[in-house]
Image 1 (cartoon, helix red, strand yellow):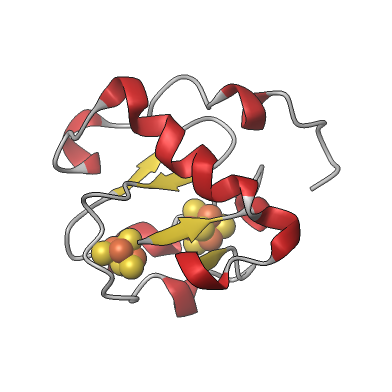
Image 2 (cartoon, rainbow, N blue to C red):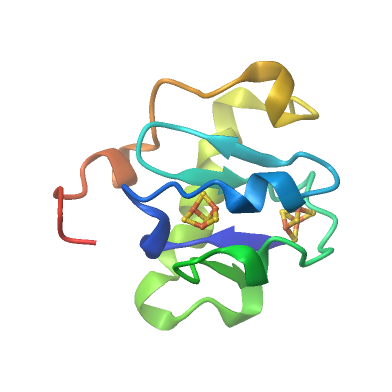
Length: 105
Ligand code: F3S
Ligand code: F3S
């Protein structure tokens, strides 16, 4: 799967959403999350992010490895909706992201 990391926090450019053929990038208040089971590893999202927040899971920089679990944890309760457009933005992030200080990412 691909993973969205720290640069997305409080930026939420959303260019990635338009590129994803399976609509597996889900929005929350402070960032977007890639569904690890729905992502088909096409890689189309990675080059379009203007802040370079998206990485293949094996390439996530060490300082941001916890974002891999944050992306997965986001879907622990949600499950597999099968498409972000139909569910719309969610109203809360995972705790690890919600608790990040503002303006420090
Ligand atoms: Fe975030 Fe980049 Fe997508 S800022 S919303 S990962 S285009
Ligand atoms: Fe979509 Fe990016 Fe995966 S475009 S299928 S989230 S690699």
